[in-house]
Length: 305
Image (cartoon, rainbow, N blue to C red; front, side, top):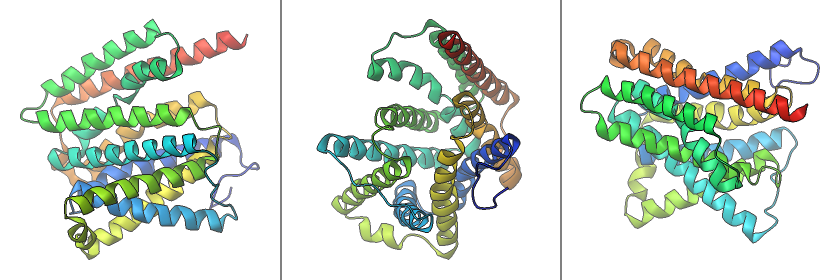
């Protein structure tokens, strides 16, 4: 087994372990977001800047190059995707700072609910009634989560907006994934998000304050967030997808909220504890997502026979 990256000689169990490790890393981003003292806008500006640098350096280390954008249409799509990703991250960290990691990740787990309605819109296919049923179950679970907390309406609204933007980003990326190598797509999208956020901060007269905002501890956490949790994890996840089926990947990624909440409880203890109804509702949401993944697997199996 390679300590740097998975390879063709590793057994399948190693690739499964790598995928869970990457999802665990993604689950840790919420913890880092809470540990970093700066506001959501400043946090995301520094994360994207450092991630662009680390991703470029990592590609150079692997002997790969960032591909050039071949058309104006592709450039517009990449720019839009980058802005969507940037706002998703801003709203994600804003929700954490408004409430806590557990509530934010519960909201973020509703992403497949938004995807179920966005995919037919962008790919011009019929809405699957099974996905509508799963979406209804997700809404029921989410209502239980919402009903378990008081005074968190704004945090829940921001968290759900972040979830919707995450789903939109995934759907938009699905339209261009075959036009460019994945790491290059990520580089240009991150660069677009950085430029967009920089323009916004400059227009509001807060860019200089944002640049100077992090303290010494923040810089250490930001470097970890941008390098290990963003550039490294992204490249490795793309590589692992060569060895695992889409169903396995989706099923593993659905574990991210669970890992994130467990890590938050481990690091912050009682500050992240939620009422029992919250965890029941969260479990309902996850069961619906697993049921949806199972139904999609059966549907693809039927189409291939």
